[in-house]
Length: 317
Image (tube, rainbow, N blue to C red; front, top):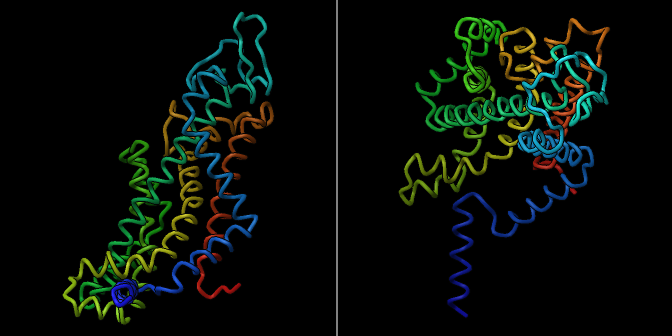
Protein backbone atom coordinates (compact mmCIF):
# COMPACT_ATOMS: atom_id res chain seq x y z
CA UNK A 1 0.00 0.00 0.00
CA UNK A 2 2.81 2.37 0.91
CA UNK A 3 4.72 1.48 -2.27
CA UNK A 4 1.66 2.28 -4.41
CA UNK A 5 1.25 5.67 -2.74
CA UNK A 6 4.91 6.45 -3.28
CA UNK A 7 4.63 5.45 -6.96
CA UNK A 8 1.56 7.65 -7.45
CA UNK A 9 3.29 10.55 -5.72
CA UNK A 10 6.31 10.20 -8.00
CA UNK A 11 4.10 10.07 -11.10
CA UNK A 12 2.23 13.19 -9.99
CA UNK A 13 5.50 14.99 -9.25
CA UNK A 14 6.82 14.08 -12.73
CA UNK A 15 3.68 15.44 -14.38
CA UNK A 16 3.88 18.62 -12.32
CA UNK A 17 7.52 19.04 -13.32
CA UNK A 18 6.48 18.98 -16.97
CA UNK A 19 3.87 21.65 -16.41
CA UNK A 20 0.97 19.21 -16.50
CA UNK A 21 -1.72 18.46 -14.00
CA UNK A 22 -1.96 14.77 -13.03
CA UNK A 23 -5.75 15.13 -12.80
CA UNK A 24 -6.67 17.53 -15.57
CA UNK A 25 -4.31 17.02 -18.54
CA UNK A 26 -6.22 14.14 -20.06
CA UNK A 27 -9.64 15.72 -19.47
CA UNK A 28 -8.46 18.98 -21.07
CA UNK A 29 -7.40 17.16 -24.26
CA UNK A 30 -10.62 15.18 -24.26
CA UNK A 31 -12.65 18.37 -24.00
CA UNK A 32 -10.62 19.92 -26.82
CA UNK A 33 -11.25 16.88 -29.02
CA UNK A 34 -14.95 16.95 -28.20
CA UNK A 35 -15.18 20.67 -29.01
CA UNK A 36 -13.42 20.09 -32.32
CA UNK A 37 -15.67 17.16 -33.28
CA UNK A 38 -18.78 19.20 -32.45
CA UNK A 39 -17.64 21.89 -34.90
CA UNK A 40 -19.10 20.51 -38.11
CA UNK A 41 -17.36 23.05 -40.33
CA UNK A 42 -13.97 22.20 -38.82
CA UNK A 43 -14.56 18.47 -39.28
CA UNK A 44 -15.72 19.06 -42.84
CA UNK A 45 -12.61 21.11 -43.60
CA UNK A 46 -10.35 18.45 -42.10
CA UNK A 47 -11.99 15.67 -44.11
CA UNK A 48 -11.80 17.66 -47.35
CA UNK A 49 -8.14 18.54 -46.81
CA UNK A 50 -7.34 14.89 -46.04
CA UNK A 51 -9.13 13.76 -49.21
CA UNK A 52 -7.19 16.30 -51.28
CA UNK A 53 -3.91 15.08 -49.82
CA UNK A 54 -4.83 11.45 -50.56
CA UNK A 55 -5.93 12.42 -54.08
CA UNK A 56 -2.65 14.18 -54.88
CA UNK A 57 -0.46 11.50 -53.28
CA UNK A 58 -2.20 8.92 -55.45
CA UNK A 59 -1.73 10.98 -58.62
CA UNK A 60 0.47 8.40 -60.44
CA UNK A 61 -2.01 5.62 -59.73
CA UNK A 62 -4.97 7.75 -60.79
CA UNK A 63 -3.12 8.73 -63.94
CA UNK A 64 -2.45 5.13 -64.88
CA UNK A 65 -5.67 3.41 -63.86
CA UNK A 66 -8.38 6.10 -63.82
CA UNK A 67 -7.77 8.97 -66.23
CA UNK A 68 -5.42 7.06 -68.54
CA UNK A 69 -3.33 10.14 -69.32
CA UNK A 70 -0.07 11.64 -68.10
CA UNK A 71 0.06 15.37 -67.30
CA UNK A 72 2.29 16.08 -70.35
CA UNK A 73 0.51 13.74 -72.78
CA UNK A 74 -0.88 15.59 -75.80
CA UNK A 75 -3.79 14.31 -77.86
CA UNK A 76 -3.63 15.72 -81.37
CA UNK A 77 -6.80 17.34 -82.60
CA UNK A 78 -8.32 17.50 -79.12
CA UNK A 79 -7.52 21.06 -78.08
CA UNK A 80 -9.94 22.99 -75.84
CA UNK A 81 -12.48 20.17 -75.73
CA UNK A 82 -15.31 20.45 -73.23
CA UNK A 83 -15.68 18.16 -70.17
CA UNK A 84 -16.72 14.63 -71.07
CA UNK A 85 -15.00 14.67 -74.48
CA UNK A 86 -14.23 11.27 -76.02
CA UNK A 87 -12.34 10.86 -79.29
CA UNK A 88 -14.35 8.07 -80.86
CA UNK A 89 -11.90 7.76 -83.74
CA UNK A 90 -9.30 6.29 -81.43
CA UNK A 91 -9.60 2.61 -80.61
CA UNK A 92 -8.59 2.80 -76.94
CA UNK A 93 -9.74 6.34 -76.30
CA UNK A 94 -10.35 7.55 -72.74
CA UNK A 95 -12.86 10.14 -71.64
CA UNK A 96 -11.50 13.56 -70.76
CA UNK A 97 -13.66 14.05 -67.66
CA UNK A 98 -12.81 17.76 -67.27
CA UNK A 99 -11.95 18.41 -70.90
CA UNK A 100 -8.60 19.30 -72.48
CA UNK A 101 -6.44 22.42 -72.48
CA UNK A 102 -5.01 24.49 -75.33
CA UNK A 103 -2.45 21.76 -76.17
CA UNK A 104 -4.79 18.79 -75.89
CA UNK A 105 -3.68 17.69 -72.42
CA UNK A 106 -6.14 16.16 -69.97
CA UNK A 107 -7.30 18.81 -67.48
CA UNK A 108 -8.21 16.41 -64.66
CA UNK A 109 -4.80 14.73 -64.74
CA UNK A 110 -3.02 18.09 -64.70
CA UNK A 111 -5.17 19.32 -61.80
CA UNK A 112 -4.29 16.23 -59.74
CA UNK A 113 -0.57 16.58 -60.43
CA UNK A 114 -0.79 20.36 -60.03
CA UNK A 115 -2.36 19.88 -56.62
CA UNK A 116 0.54 17.61 -55.72
CA UNK A 117 2.97 20.44 -56.47
CA UNK A 118 0.91 23.14 -54.76
CA UNK A 119 0.34 21.11 -51.59
CA UNK A 120 4.01 20.05 -51.50
CA UNK A 121 5.10 23.68 -51.67
CA UNK A 122 2.62 24.72 -48.97
CA UNK A 123 3.41 21.90 -46.53
CA UNK A 124 7.19 22.23 -46.96
CA UNK A 125 6.96 25.99 -46.52
CA UNK A 126 4.90 25.65 -43.35
CA UNK A 127 7.23 22.95 -41.97
CA UNK A 128 10.39 25.03 -42.52
CA UNK A 129 8.88 28.34 -41.41
CA UNK A 130 7.33 26.89 -38.24
CA UNK A 131 10.54 25.05 -37.32
CA UNK A 132 12.81 28.05 -37.84
CA UNK A 133 10.34 30.52 -36.35
CA UNK A 134 9.94 28.30 -33.28
CA UNK A 135 13.72 28.13 -32.77
CA UNK A 136 14.16 31.90 -33.08
CA UNK A 137 11.18 32.67 -30.86
CA UNK A 138 12.26 30.15 -28.23
CA UNK A 139 15.77 31.58 -27.99
CA UNK A 140 14.52 35.17 -27.91
CA UNK A 141 11.83 34.43 -25.34
CA UNK A 142 13.85 32.24 -23.00
CA UNK A 143 17.18 34.08 -22.92
CA UNK A 144 15.93 37.62 -23.59
CA UNK A 145 18.51 40.34 -23.10
CA UNK A 146 20.71 41.37 -26.00
CA UNK A 147 20.09 38.16 -27.97
CA UNK A 148 16.34 38.58 -27.68
CA UNK A 149 16.51 42.21 -28.79
CA UNK A 150 18.73 41.43 -31.79
CA UNK A 151 16.49 38.58 -32.96
CA UNK A 152 13.31 40.61 -32.57
CA UNK A 153 14.81 43.56 -34.47
CA UNK A 154 15.69 41.11 -37.26
CA UNK A 155 12.07 39.97 -37.25
CA UNK A 156 10.89 43.58 -37.48
CA UNK A 157 13.19 44.25 -40.43
CA UNK A 158 11.97 41.20 -42.37
CA UNK A 159 8.32 41.99 -41.62
CA UNK A 160 8.80 45.53 -42.96
CA UNK A 161 9.86 44.25 -46.40
CA UNK A 162 7.03 43.97 -48.98
CA UNK A 163 6.97 40.19 -49.27
CA UNK A 164 5.32 39.84 -52.69
CA UNK A 165 7.74 42.24 -54.42
CA UNK A 166 10.74 40.53 -52.83
CA UNK A 167 9.42 37.13 -53.88
CA UNK A 168 8.97 38.35 -57.46
CA UNK A 169 12.52 39.72 -57.46
CA UNK A 170 14.03 36.49 -56.12
CA UNK A 171 11.99 34.31 -58.47
CA UNK A 172 12.86 36.39 -61.53
CA UNK A 173 16.61 36.45 -60.76
CA UNK A 174 17.27 32.94 -59.43
CA UNK A 175 14.40 30.94 -61.04
CA UNK A 176 14.10 28.45 -58.14
CA UNK A 177 12.54 25.05 -58.63
CA UNK A 178 9.62 23.65 -56.65
CA UNK A 179 11.66 22.98 -53.50
CA UNK A 180 13.55 26.24 -53.91
CA UNK A 181 10.30 28.15 -54.17
CA UNK A 182 9.09 26.58 -50.92
CA UNK A 183 12.32 27.58 -49.16
CA UNK A 184 12.05 31.13 -50.49
CA UNK A 185 8.49 31.39 -49.21
CA UNK A 186 9.59 29.98 -45.86
CA UNK A 187 12.30 32.63 -45.43
CA UNK A 188 9.62 35.33 -45.43
CA UNK A 189 6.87 33.56 -43.46
CA UNK A 190 8.60 32.51 -40.21
CA UNK A 191 8.43 35.91 -38.52
CA UNK A 192 4.86 35.63 -37.26
CA UNK A 193 5.57 32.22 -35.72
CA UNK A 194 8.68 33.55 -33.96
CA UNK A 195 6.76 36.36 -32.32
CA UNK A 196 4.02 33.97 -31.26
CA UNK A 197 6.51 31.53 -29.72
CA UNK A 198 8.41 34.33 -28.00
CA UNK A 199 5.20 35.47 -26.32
CA UNK A 200 4.46 31.94 -25.14
CA UNK A 201 7.97 31.53 -23.72
CA UNK A 202 7.77 34.84 -21.89
CA UNK A 203 4.55 33.55 -20.30
CA UNK A 204 5.90 30.13 -19.30
CA UNK A 205 9.57 30.65 -18.41
CA UNK A 206 8.87 32.01 -14.90
CA UNK A 207 6.32 29.37 -13.90
CA UNK A 208 6.87 26.92 -11.08
CA UNK A 209 7.55 23.85 -13.21
CA UNK A 210 10.37 25.70 -15.03
CA UNK A 211 11.88 26.77 -11.71
CA UNK A 212 11.66 23.17 -10.51
CA UNK A 213 13.49 22.00 -13.64
CA UNK A 214 16.27 24.51 -12.99
CA UNK A 215 16.55 23.35 -9.38
CA UNK A 216 17.17 19.72 -10.37
CA UNK A 217 19.89 20.84 -12.78
CA UNK A 218 18.15 20.85 -16.19
CA UNK A 219 20.02 22.88 -18.81
CA UNK A 220 18.53 25.54 -21.08
CA UNK A 221 18.12 23.16 -24.03
CA UNK A 222 16.21 20.61 -21.94
CA UNK A 223 14.02 23.27 -20.37
CA UNK A 224 13.22 24.80 -23.77
CA UNK A 225 12.47 21.62 -25.71
CA UNK A 226 11.34 19.25 -22.95
CA UNK A 227 9.36 21.49 -20.62
CA UNK A 228 8.27 24.81 -22.15
CA UNK A 229 7.82 23.98 -25.85
CA UNK A 230 5.31 21.11 -25.30
CA UNK A 231 3.13 23.57 -23.39
CA UNK A 232 3.24 26.04 -26.30
CA UNK A 233 2.29 23.64 -29.10
CA UNK A 234 -1.40 24.57 -29.25
CA UNK A 235 -0.92 28.04 -30.82
CA UNK A 236 1.76 26.58 -33.10
CA UNK A 237 -0.66 23.99 -34.48
CA UNK A 238 -3.24 26.67 -35.14
CA UNK A 239 -0.70 28.97 -36.80
CA UNK A 240 0.55 26.15 -39.02
CA UNK A 241 -2.90 25.13 -40.26
CA UNK A 242 -3.92 28.72 -40.94
CA UNK A 243 -0.67 29.31 -42.85
CA UNK A 244 -1.37 26.51 -45.34
CA UNK A 245 -4.07 28.51 -47.11
CA UNK A 246 -1.94 31.67 -47.23
CA UNK A 247 1.01 29.82 -48.73
CA UNK A 248 -1.16 28.19 -51.40
CA UNK A 249 -2.54 31.59 -52.39
CA UNK A 250 0.97 33.09 -52.49
CA UNK A 251 2.31 30.24 -54.63
CA UNK A 252 -0.71 30.56 -56.90
CA UNK A 253 -0.14 34.30 -57.29
CA UNK A 254 3.54 33.80 -58.15
CA UNK A 255 2.74 31.04 -60.64
CA UNK A 256 -0.02 33.17 -62.13
CA UNK A 257 2.52 35.96 -62.65
CA UNK A 258 4.92 33.51 -64.27
CA UNK A 259 7.40 33.66 -61.36
CA UNK A 260 6.50 30.44 -59.56
CA UNK A 261 6.40 26.83 -60.74
CA UNK A 262 7.42 26.81 -64.40
CA UNK A 263 5.77 24.75 -67.19
CA UNK A 264 5.64 21.95 -68.15
CA UNK A 265 5.38 21.10 -64.44
CA UNK A 266 1.71 21.73 -63.66
CA UNK A 267 0.50 23.73 -60.69
CA UNK A 268 -2.86 25.33 -60.06
CA UNK A 269 -1.32 28.76 -60.47
CA UNK A 270 0.32 28.26 -63.86
CA UNK A 271 -2.79 26.43 -65.09
CA UNK A 272 -4.70 29.64 -64.43
CA UNK A 273 -2.00 31.61 -66.25
CA UNK A 274 -2.16 29.42 -69.33
CA UNK A 275 -5.96 29.52 -69.48
CA UNK A 276 -6.63 33.24 -69.02
CA UNK A 277 -6.51 33.93 -72.77
CA UNK A 278 -9.23 31.27 -73.29
CA UNK A 279 -11.66 32.77 -70.81
CA UNK A 280 -14.54 32.95 -73.29
CA UNK A 281 -13.71 29.95 -75.47
CA UNK A 282 -13.05 27.50 -72.63
CA UNK A 283 -14.07 28.95 -69.25
CA UNK A 284 -13.76 25.53 -67.60
CA UNK A 285 -9.95 25.87 -67.82
CA UNK A 286 -10.20 28.63 -65.20
CA UNK A 287 -13.16 27.30 -63.23
CA UNK A 288 -11.75 23.89 -62.30
CA UNK A 289 -8.28 24.92 -61.03
CA UNK A 290 -9.85 27.90 -59.25
CA UNK A 291 -12.41 25.62 -57.64
CA UNK A 292 -9.70 23.31 -56.29
CA UNK A 293 -7.78 26.31 -54.91
CA UNK A 294 -10.97 27.56 -53.24
CA UNK A 295 -11.74 24.16 -51.68
CA UNK A 296 -8.18 23.68 -50.39
CA UNK A 297 -7.80 27.14 -48.86
CA UNK A 298 -11.29 27.08 -47.37
CA UNK A 299 -10.73 23.60 -45.88
CA UNK A 300 -7.40 24.60 -44.31
CA UNK A 301 -8.93 27.74 -42.80
CA UNK A 302 -11.96 25.89 -41.45
CA UNK A 303 -9.72 23.31 -39.82
CA UNK A 304 -7.48 26.03 -38.39
CA UNK A 305 -10.41 27.95 -36.95
CA UNK A 306 -11.77 24.77 -35.40
CA UNK A 307 -8.42 23.94 -33.80
CA UNK A 308 -8.12 27.49 -32.48
CA UNK A 309 -11.50 27.27 -30.76
CA UNK A 310 -10.92 23.73 -29.50
CA UNK A 311 -7.48 24.41 -28.04
CA UNK A 312 -8.41 27.73 -26.47
CA UNK A 313 -8.14 27.17 -22.68
CA UNK A 314 -10.72 29.89 -22.09
CA UNK A 315 -13.38 27.82 -23.81
CA UNK A 316 -15.71 26.02 -21.43
CA UNK A 317 -18.14 23.19 -21.88
